[in-house]
Image 1 (cartoon, each protein chain N blue to C red):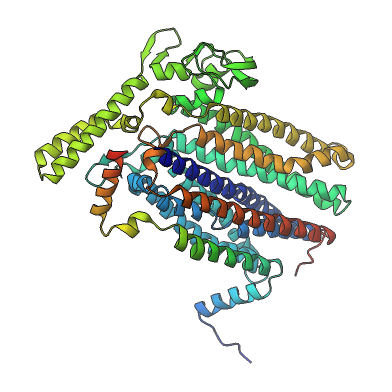
Image 2: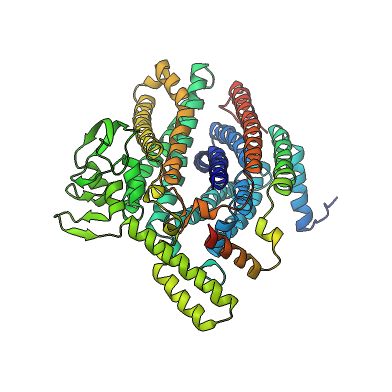
Length: 522
Length: 74
């Protein structure tokens, strides 16, 4: 068992490392492609060389990010086949179909339109070139859609039926994949890319202002990046709010972890800032938090759109306790019962297996019916104690609050910067703010990655919510091989990241020395 | 003198060929992409990340049996 858990832990770290690395590139691709498309549209409308130069400058940075990031997501698929083979089989075509669509779309759209974007200047008509730029932008978002639909299904598995003969979940309703979780997740993740790219453009432009290079170009870029980023951030916040409602419905344990809430209440406050009590157990009398500043009723409203609503904490969820807003008890299934029903589902699967070996169709049907009755709690059957079904509270809590706090910070930064570029050219003189904008670039990535930590750590121990915990999803492989490949990835990713940052900064430095008021890149 | 009319595949080939030839930053990037793809697909995928169920079993039925035993015995 120890070795199994070692394999699980290292495989999780490896997956996290790969996903975090992959996500360094994705949001910048999503957002910067839009900014470039908008700039090129302005160029085509105004025929101004300065917009052509701006388009090409940011397009080159887009290209560097795209080139270094491309195919990094494929490693996640390698890991599915080796480390998580039970999971890969169990999810069947539900995961495979969206990923296959994504792969085909990504290949054809990107191979075609990215090439036209970079090679097509002067060779295709300006309108066709612009269309290619927009299609690259749209194609990147469509690619993200399928990945995020697949991810959302793991958080809220719907639209399928489990077939014990195939040992797979078989899709029976494709459109059910577009659940509230999936829709919110898609918009939340892709729009956050706009917000991230906006800060990237503002940061790089601020650096030019600090170096006194291409000042008009920098201000022009900040206006485009600033508005797109601000709109993206506001919509990210809106869809984040929608995600919280969905999480409260379908993953209440994750919501409790996000808030470090063990014992819920009516008019439950939301923590503005606070410190988790690391010694707290779900069933003891210690305080949840060492200290906290709360907004009264905030979590009740966030989760259930009612300031007086009851929000269950970890202990409530484990004990099956919930209430309506007016205090009437609601029947939910306790974790002890879920574990018992999960074990019944396992027993039914064993019976099915024996009946199958004995070629007894009647017994197979009977076992299948019994399995179906308890299948929704199948994953709980792997636990001996309810403690195993609790996610890491502190990591989820801090990641969530870092994401929210930084989101608020970036909203303020966008407002101040945009005010500064329009009001008496104040931003051009405010060197302190230019420094802040520059330093904020890597901080934006922290915010973006923190969001994924909330989404993925907060749903532990599940690979598929309620159906398959990590310990069942893992392959029978040696921990030594996982540890070896973990460090190999760490080395490869570090080298590639250094390459990206150095090529990117060199290109920014080189590009900024050119006169970006005219297009001199022909 | 009239230019010969070229076929669509030939024009696409020329488009990409000229594009690659005229690249500046892109040459370094393509070198990185090719090295990266080699590391990912030849080193990492072939040596360290086989698809276990594809490698170890011949049919979907065998794979399903294996996963069933795994999920029953965990």
